[in-house]
Image (cartoon, rainbow, N blue to C red):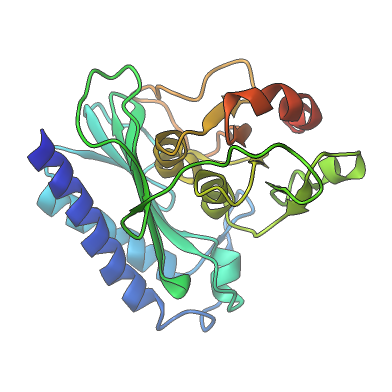
Length: 269
């Protein structure tokens, strides 16, 4: 099994580096169009999506694919990659350096591995979280090959909590941390994984915003809390996930959930 995980990691590192190098040529130079759900897409998103799907089909022909740009119905395959070719398209088109390429690997509908590369700032995150899957292999979470861990600090005026564009109403009320909003769902979450922030909230993330970082955050010691009654995972084969949001809270450790959750639960209503 360890050979399999090494293949998965090497594939993710090599592919995201290749795609990222090519995307840098279009960074800040392409125009976006609006999709039916209000999100943006560019020719660069579509190109990267096609290249990633082709590479998966060649390297893991028995694996399925779920992708923001093309495939929204979960296939029957036990193993399935979830792709976001450019997370942060708005940043990408406006020349802002925080945007990434996200790859999550599901086993029977639940993420067990994630990899996200941010080419412009030269950061590659990856991590493993097997939960109740029965799988074994490497553990933990990493940034550029070095282990990362969530923070053990207490909330306070000098600590950070990340918001998304649709959760800014939270800032109108007293909160025990300073807010940051960076415009990229995966990066907001990964700042919790590497200890820079104590928590974060996403009001309307889609499955491609979540799949990779779900594994990385928990591999780093963090917790993921669904803000709706139904759990996020496992996903169900045959279900359409193109328009379904998954309001979520991420915290650096379980003790902070009772502090943060009442303050952010309103975004799921």
